[in-house]
Length: 183
Image (cartoon, rainbow, N blue to C red; front, side, top):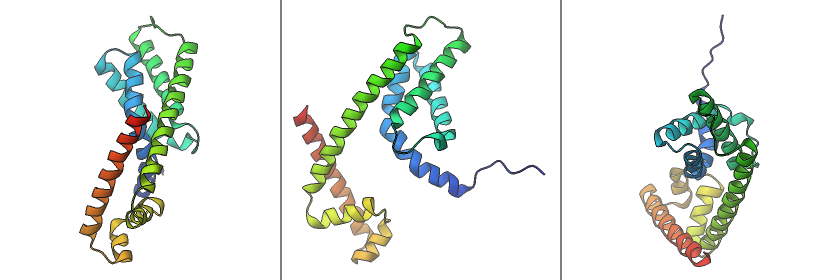
């Protein structure tokens, strides 16, 4: 009897919780990278979707703590090369060595950008009042859901949602101001 090849829903949820934040943080950069190598937007979009599919399928091969952007750009680069082979468009402006150097350089730039944003985030969170920092800690450091936070601090869920909305808006504005000053 053949074993069922479908994944358990809990496995999919766990994958989504780990994969989604990483891809959301890098998707624009990844898409731009592909578009820089494949000038046709439709083709680049197809390669981007295929890259996301492969990344999701191979996510268990990604080593947590390593460079997610470099890993994803490597998959994208391979997809671009496969696309070119399939389309018999072997005239490339970049040799594989140049592509690798481009990936390394863009990864370094992206890491620097992420470091700047993380520093700005930390400074902006420090500027929050004690109650707001505690809410952020409960939600993002401890990973508690809004309903549990509501019970823990004896406030309505609606009040918690409004507080998070206000806090996030303030932190986002602070980060934008901080980054525009530093640039």
